[in-house]
Amino acid sequence: MSAINKLSVGIRKFHTTASRLRKYVELTAVRYPLLKRGNFSFLSDRHLGFFQSILSAHQVLTDELNDLSGYNVDWMRSVRGSSRLVLRPKTTEEVAAILQYCNVQNIAICPQGGNTGLVGGSVPVFDEVVLSLELMDEVISVDELSGVTIVQAGCVLEKLETVLHLSNLALPLDLGAKGSCQIGGNVATNAGGIRLLRYGNLHGSVLGLTAVLANGQIMDCLNTNKKDNTGYDLKQLFIGSEGTLGVVTQVALQCQPKPSSVQVGFFGLNSFENVLETLRLSKRNLGEILSSCELIDQSSLECVTKQLELRSPINNFPFYMLLETAGSNAGHDAEKLNSLLEILINNGTIVDGTLAVDSAQAKNLWGLRERISEALACEGYVYKYDVSVPIRQFYQLVDDIRIRLGNLPIRCCGYGHLGDGNLHLNITSHEYNPILLNRIEPFVYDWVGQERGSVSAEHGLGLKKRDYMEYSKSPTAIHWMRRVKKLFDPNNILNPYKIFPEQSSTD
Ligand SMILES: Cc1cc2nc3c(=O)[nH]c(=O)nc-3n(C[C@H](O)[C@H](O)[C@H](O)COP(=O)(O)OP(=O)(O)OC[C@H]3O[C@@H](n4cnc5c(N)ncnc54)[C@H](O)[C@@H]3O)c2cc1C
Image (spheres, rainbow, N blue to C red):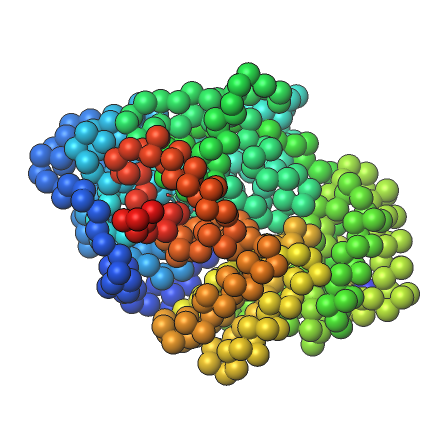
């Protein structure tokens, strides 16, 4: 194993390259002509006057040229709304006053966190008012003993992580967008990320939350106990609801002791069978200290190194794996990892690789995995699929779609959270190409449906995946989800056009 010498510094913080920003984004209403604006009120001076009467000037943005464009376009620069108003409340009570008014006036709202969502859920489709949580970014309390942390929903994940480290605590989730995404957005999407393997998803780590309902009612479910079996656990409904049931304003999280020993390794493998064997033996031999197990294929690595000028310590393998351990005893953890590597090298499962010798090198290795999304976006338009598939079939979908698409796209690659069976299949073209899209969809969804996988493992449905819910949910489940939506938001003002497929008159 060679140590890493000169890797270029991959900054973990969220990036937006200038070339991407210059790209023109077609209006969603033009790109998707079948979408019809709901029967909502158009914004009037009277409405604006009300919002200006309850909020300060800097909390009400109306300047289309200078202020609004960033709120109307998604991170992938693939959808664009035409909202004329962004509201930036600072308290739960201000959110409640806004929603109460919008509900009575029939004004549609698009809740927005860090706007890093990848399914077109975080920006308006037409002229919905954007409700940005960005000014609600306070860390309210941190208890080192219990790990219970209470935070306002607009707090950026990386800021929260920094605050927690001061108390020797760590977040139960981590993702490439942490420099911009907010904890409220994470809860609303039930974000997964690179540590789900170790800590599980947010349905387990969120102890409680406060949400404002469509009618302005404040639902206080800010429980901080680990155990609470007093009736229905209503907070779970908001986790993964993508802004369609209520606006999350506060979150109580179960945080974990910060690991004092972290090891990161990056390995090259010659076949997918070897990848599976490495996963199997890592789980068995590393046990409780295994904190991440990520896969990167050759094409993904080629893209991230070329587009972002990062250096990989090893090259020319069809597959790469990034393994991380996190524990509390460096000697014990190193012994475990070393004996695993001895087995894997001796039986020829991994061919080459490197272990980071310090945190800077570990960060560089993580950059090769976490910045793939950003690198792909530099190639033009990205067709993104985030699916759960049975682990043995994990890479078969990439092979099958490559054969199907031939040389139509620039690139067809696969990477993702192997340890969780979550594949990120990505296809790129210079610009949006409906012919290519029709070759990909619904083929991808049929493929995943036949394997009884999930068409959205962690990014949600938003606008772009909403028509494919039925591939992963039964008609009865969809029926009851619609009933829940109707109960919480009878006027459909909260993030309309998202999650649910358009309903025909006979449904
Ligand atoms: C580089 C990169 C890497 C990523 N890696 C991962 C990953 O590993 N795992 C993963 O799961 N996702 C990942 N994502 C996707 C994205 O970061 C997550 O979905 C994230 O949780 C979104 O948070 P946000 O604050 O940006 O929310 P937004 O994008 O602003 O919103 C997402 C959805 O939540 C709703 N929403 C936001 N805030 C609230 C609120 N307070 N109350 C109610 N609804 C709200 C919005 O209406 C929208 O429907 C990645 C994205 C990028 C760009």
